[in-house]
Image (cartoon, rainbow, N blue to C red; front, side):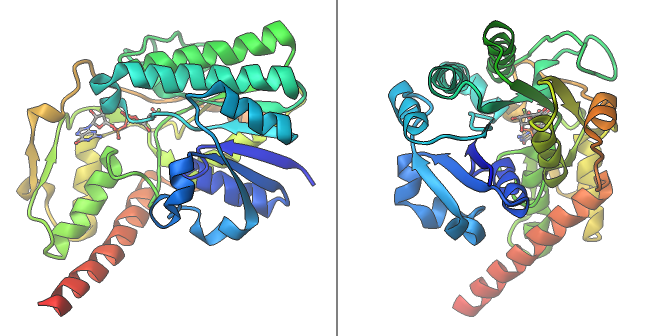
Length: 332
Ligand code: G4F
């Protein structure tokens, strides 16, 4: 039985990847913060249903000794490094801690693996934010990087570290350059979930308006459950490499709003308001990926369309909002 460690197992991608690896017969371990272990009801909502099949280890990406300790006590075949400060807007508010967690955290995991488990295969969660102010359309593995946020810069550094460990020490280190990927498990701070959860709250009378920033930004949105299959496949190849994972379509935030509101029979123009404070100091205007390499070399293909994704997210948030509005009605 293969053993895998997932950093960031409590997040959207970590939870889908853990399910996928369990289905494939893996023994799945997760690295979690100690505070999470002490507050499972709030911190483990995405992995609650599989908790009894996971082994969790407390550690912090800010502490090399804590990472070293895990690898000195356990041997893994594969390590999926997903944990990061992943909210771009927050990286403008606190660039220092984003850099610290994302760059040093990646370096600590790589350095500990080199020392203790150089044969363990390593995956780094790169991001389309690395392309930033894009140099070509669509973007592929050869497109040069031009990050537009401390988050994007930290991911370029993590990507370079990963490639350097591969080239310098011959380790199996691969990076996925994943374009935006969403699901009903997406955090509420990201625009898609902010939209679908507010649509549901407006429909059920729990909210009246939705404040957003730049409606004209364009993103290549896919489904997280599809994207974790590509992540897994990247560590099963004869040689380590880097892959773009994307849907190949681009849509604006405005278009996402229009379709999400339409899903419940509403017109977004009646509810969406602009809050200039939500606009970023430097924006990534357009992302669209070319996943030809992942398709041909990994045999990967997405199974859900953009519209499938919106419908699933709106329906899931609608169920939650209906329960909440029912609870509120029964209190009154
Ligand atoms: O949903 P977002 O916050 O995602 P963003 O910045 O594209 O980053 C996400 O995808 C990356 C992959 O490319 C990941 F690496 C990263 O960790 C994260 O998962 O924002 C999407 C777009 C932006 O252009 C933003 O300016 O939506 C625009 N937007 C407009 N109003 C908003 C809002 N974004 C947020 N979060 N909240 C708003 O009110």
